[in-house]
Length: 162
Image (tube, rainbow, N blue to C red; front, side):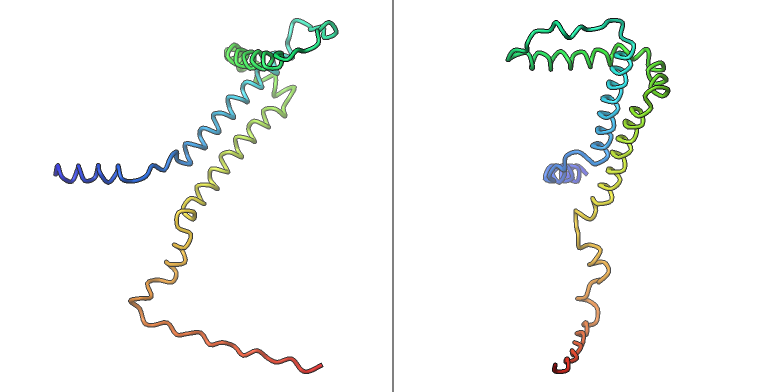
């Protein structure tokens, strides 16, 4: 029994790793879409209910490093707003369903596309592993059966001369 265990462990080690399964990839895609969707909903709600107004006429000309700094600050604000608006999730969702219905519909449709593409990939997975398996199953094992008769070629009709 100990030999069987060691042999099965050796066989498992010899098999190449196939990476992530399609199910795990689709679940990851749906989670990422949900997180970005929640962040978009929260930031949209936060911007609509802002208590301050930014005066853009007094801003200085941008410098070379300003773009990177602005990117980092924007991502930090996005993440911060997403986290701080979690307790207000019912208000955020309700406000979007009343005022900006397109955003929740967009998020749900993207999630649906991810799930449907997962089903499509799952259906293609078996075909990609062995594309000729179905053909071999239909044909059967011809080596053990009676010899196949060659098909007769049809004679072509000659066209009449012009």
